[in-house]
Amino acid sequence: AQSVTQLGSHVSVSEGALVLLRCNYSSSVPPYLFWYVQYPNQGLQLLLKYTSAATLVKGINGFEAEFKKSETSFHLTKPSAHMSDAAEYFCAVSFFGNEKLTFGTGTRLTIIP
Amino acid sequence: GAGVSQSPSNKVTEKGKDVELRCDPISGHTALYWYRQRLGQGLEFLIYFQGNSAPDKSGLPSDRFSAERTGESVSTLTIQRTQQEDSAVYLCASSLLAGELFFGEGSRLTVL
Image 1: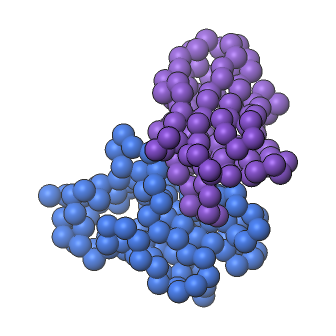
Image 2 (image 1 turned 30 degrees about the horizontal axis):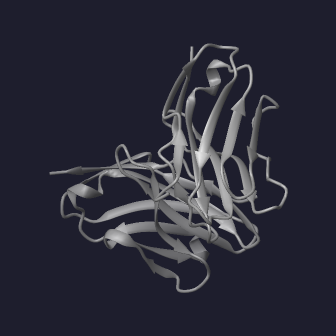
């Protein structure tokens, strides 16, 4: 069975600072990995995905994530935080042949002016 | 429609009553998912429909929960004899490509 663990239910960063949201996965087969974002009062939307092509994946709004098999990680980063990045971020995993996404518990990102 | 539509957006019910939650997926999306999000928690998978295949019901928490989907269109999630622990936001999503889910804004259920 696959699962993801998100370290830190709440993360606060200053505007302009680096954003780092952590996600570690557990999967017995090569995983597909995703980050979803939920802005206040909106539905979840896909931020980026890894499906076994390039290990560094770029998404919307300047976010990117790197798949590291040796560390079983798929951390989300953004070089410079913007106030509009305040949201809840979810990491998710599936694998080829099974489209059921298993989500992490989420990380709420707060941006400090 | 332009996106996934869910109704009702809010539902307050009494313990023991049955509720139905509806989801209209994006036209042409073959896959449809139901998730539950309890306050302060992550998304809990409930059920997954893909085309004409048998649904993956492995996440349904009890036999009080059931879901149907008509072809590749509307889905209804039914909760019978609601309990207070059923209070949550129920999220529906549809997709055409694996993993690329488009979510509705959810149905918030409160069981008194």
